[in-house]
Length: 256
Length: 268
Image (cartoon, rainbow over all chains, first blue to last red; front, top):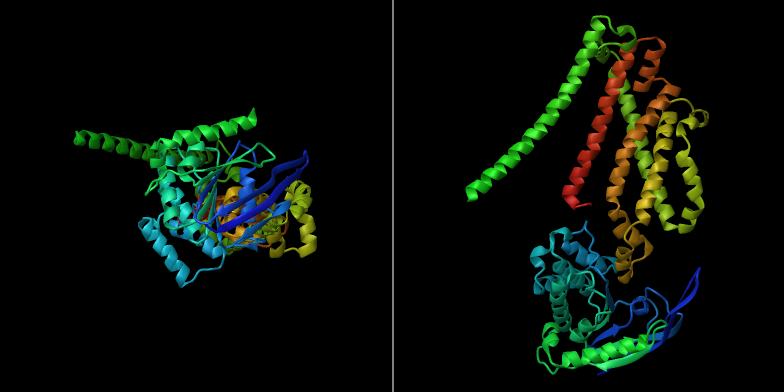
C-alpha cells in the first residue's frame, strides 16, 4: 500500500512566559492510504498538537510533511479535521452547518452541492436538514459534524478525541457509526485518543506515544481477520484483550 | 386514567392563567389607585396641585397641546433618540469589530475605554455644544456619546468570548480572519447585540433629554425645562408621562424585534 501522508522529524516547541515547552520531538511516521491509525498517549503529551500541525493550523518548529510525495506547506484541501465536540453553529440549520466548509473554501457549485446531497441521503440526515442543532440528539449532532467534515471531500480525516464529549452509551454507537461512514467513504483516518479500547476497536495501527516531549514509543498493527469489521464486534473479539494488555503495558511502562 | 391526567393538566393550565391575570389586574390596580389618590388628594387640598399638578389637569393639558405643537415636540425627541441610538449602535459595533480584529489596538485602547466608560458623558455637554453648535446635531452627539462606549465594551467583550473551538472549527476549513468574523464571531453575538440595543435605546434617550435641557429649541426635554422655568408643572408632568410611554414603546419594539429574530433564526 502506498504512502499517503509522511511526517519527517516533526518537532513543535511552544514559547510562553514560563519558558519553552516541547510538545512533540522528532516524530516521523508514514501514514498508509486508506488506513485507520490511532495515536494514543498520556494526557497532555502533545497528541492534539500533532493533528494541528498536520492540518496546517500550526507551523512545526522543524520537520517536513509530505502529502502524496509533495511537500505540504499551507492548509490543504485534502485534509479534514474533526474536533472534540461537534461545535455546530446553533444559528444555522443542519444543512447550513454542513455547508460551512464549502462556503469558506468558496467551493459551492453544482457538483459539490450534489455530493453533499448524496451524503445527506446516504447517512439519513436528509429529513433533518432544515432542523436546528438544538433539535438533535448528541449522536446525531456528531454525525452532522462528521458529514460537515466530509462535505469538502477530504482524503484524510483527522479525529481529535472526537467522541470524548459523549456519554458512554452514545459514544459506542457513534464510534460504530463514524467508523462505518469513514470506511464506506474510503478515507484515510488519523485519530488521537486517550482511550485504549476505542483505539483498538477502530484502528489498523495504533501508535503509542511517550510522555512529553512526545516521540513514538511503539506501533501496534491491529488485525481482527473479520470481513465486516465494526468497532463493536472488535470489542467482543478474543484478540481484543491481548492488544489491550500490550498497549496498557507500553503506556504504563513509559510512566514508571 | 387519561381523563384524570388531562384534567390535572387543565387544572394546572387554569391556575397558571389565573395567576397571570391576577398579576395584570394588580398592576392595573396599583396604577389606577395611584392616579386616583393623586387626583383626590389634590382636589381636597392635601397636596398643592400647583407644585404637583394633577391627573385631570394633565389630561386637559395633553389634549390642549396635542392641537398645538406637542406632536412636533414628540417627533423631534423620537427622531433624535432613534438617530442617536442607531449611530451609537452601528459605530460602537464597528469600533468593537476593529478592536477585535487587532488585539494590539484593543490592548492599547483598553484603559482609555475604561476611563471614558466611567466618565459621566453629560459633563461633555458644553464641549459638544461648542464643537457641533447648539441644535439637533449637539443633541444627537450627546446621545451618541452616552451609548457608544457601552456598545464598544459590551460588543468587544462578546466578540472576544466567542467559543475558541468554533473559531478553530472554521479554521480547519481554512477560514481567514474575515470569514471567522462574518461566519462565526458576529452571528454568535447577535444576542449580545440585541442586549446592547435594549440598553442603548434607554441610554440614547437620556442623552437626548440632557441635550434638550442644554440646548432647548424643541422636544420633550425642552418642554420639561421650559415648564419648570415658568412653573407650569402640568406641562412638566405631562411631558414626563409622554416620555415614559415613548420609552416603553421603543423598548417593546426592540423586544418584538428580538422575538421575530429568535423565531426566524434560532439566535441564542
